[in-house]
Amino acid sequence: MTYQDLSGVRVAVSDGVATLTIDNPPLNLLDETLILALRTFAARVRDDAAVRVIVFESADPDFFIAHGDMRFVTEPSRLAAYADADVLPGTNMMQTLHEEIRALPQVTIGKLAGFARGGGNELLMALDMRFAALGRGGQAQPETRMGIIPGGGGTQYLTALAGRARALELILGGALADPALAERYGLINRALPASDLDAFVTTLARHIATLSPAVIQAAKTAIDGHSLTTENEALTSLFTADAVIRAQRLLDAGVQTREGELRLEDLIDEVH
Image (cartoon, rainbow, N blue to C red; front, side, top):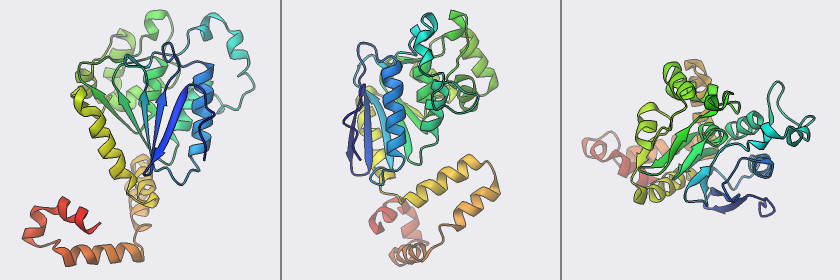
């Protein structure tokens, strides 16, 4: 699969991990160029067997994505080209983009080391996981201060992550949530020292990329299914001959012995 023809982003694939670097100067606005590039990327990568994890990062040291292009409001003709576009029923182009990314079979991870506001934060929240650098930028939905509301999925994503009360606080207040507050409110998984962010995300992404696609899909299906029945169905689908062999290898290596259980994670890695 090739991604070199996309404008506004750079994509590199290595060891099962696709790193998508947003590079849409001068501010990484979520404009027509970036929306088209991201939708094209999503359409291609979903069937790319070489990719199991996607890391979204920015080439701009200050902005992940600044926000949606405000010219969509001031110049309605910019939206005209999307009037008959292939969007999900009842949604706008930005909502469709974010839902296409949310629906990817791969695990998606956001790496935030700058500002993500408006549509930029909505895209970030559409990812499976987010990690941020302490002391660098933050996240915000400032739309109400401009006389509108978030319209790229922000009201739904923010409520799912932070709860109704905090979603109302952040949307109606419109204030910036720095990484420490964002972590406390659940907008990001972890806020890390800036010097540790790259290594942490790289290690996590490479670990997940070693998992079988079936395991990744079963985990996402069970989590998104919100039911014990879905979880049980996803689990039993993995009870294969290979799973039996792996379980026996673990038992032979010392799992379920006192010595083995004291160092279980290392033992699993060794058997893998």
